[in-house]
Image (tube, rainbow, N blue to C red; front, side, top):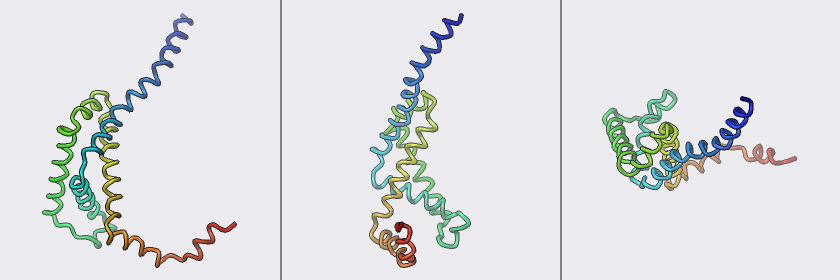
Length: 150
C-alpha cells in the first residue's frame, strides 16, 4: 500500500506542472486575442466607459459631469464591444478558457490588459501629457533630490 501511495504521489507531482501550464493557456490565449483584436476605436470605447463609471465616485463627482444619457451610451457601446470580442473575434479562445474553468481569470486578464493599454493611450494625447507634466511645477525638486543623496 505504501508503494502505491509513493507511485501515486510521483505521478501527481509529474502531472501537476503540466496541469498548471494548461490552466494558464486559456487565459493567456484569450488575453492575446483580445489585445490583438481591440483597435483604437475599441480602446476609446473602453476609456469612455471607464470614465463614465469613475465619474460617479464621490471624490470625483464635482470634477466631471457625465449625463445619464452619456453613461447609458457608454454602457451600450462597452456591452457591444465585450460581446463582439468574446463571441466573434475571440470566440474560440473564450470557449477554451470557459471549458477549462479559467473563464473568470481569462476575462479579467484580457480586459484588464486592454484597459491598461487604453489608459496608457490617454497620456499619448498632447494636452493630457502636457497637463500631467505640469505637475512638476508643484513639486519641491530640492526635496526630491535629497532622496538620492547618501
